[in-house]
Image 1 (cartoon, rainbow, N blue to C red):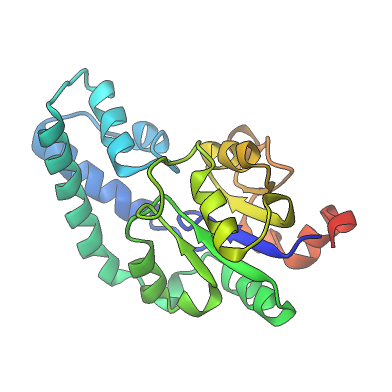
Image 2: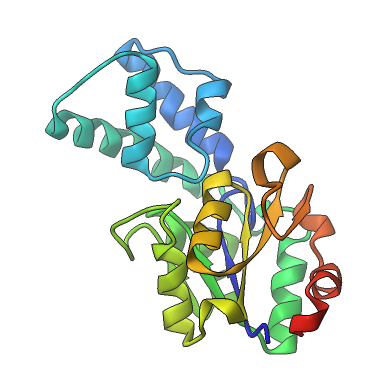
Length: 219
């Protein structure tokens, strides 16, 4: 039986991807590095430290670990400053409705995000009350595609993975859900999340009715 839902944050509950892009672009410009939308797409769902390494690899740059940490911190400072722009109007269409519906029906709900700023984003959205557990980039050492963040969330919900559905918009996020033994809902295009148990183009289509219809033997 499905008793819990675990949500990624960026691209599922809200879309701060543009704020991340702007922060990485500002850092790359300062460093004289090439950075574009195509490279940015490779950062979807992965941690800050992994992201900067992808950008460095794209530019054939190698730096010592301390410098990498400093640059990642600088990017994060730019991003965090921009989060003050986020308001409760910035839920992705359908996300708040789904969270409200899950609350009404008494399901357990957790966040499973690679972001270390997830709590700040939830506060800006006024969304903290929808979640029983917040798993973020501070909760586990290994980021997606390792299943650790989802396993952490499920453990805190006191539910086995088989009783939980994960919502993800990143390829590595679906990989992580599958590796952990979770049911999965992909949000986004076929080429990115087509390996999820069920896929929707947008959160607006991923209603509780549609999810229950697909996993009907589990409800």
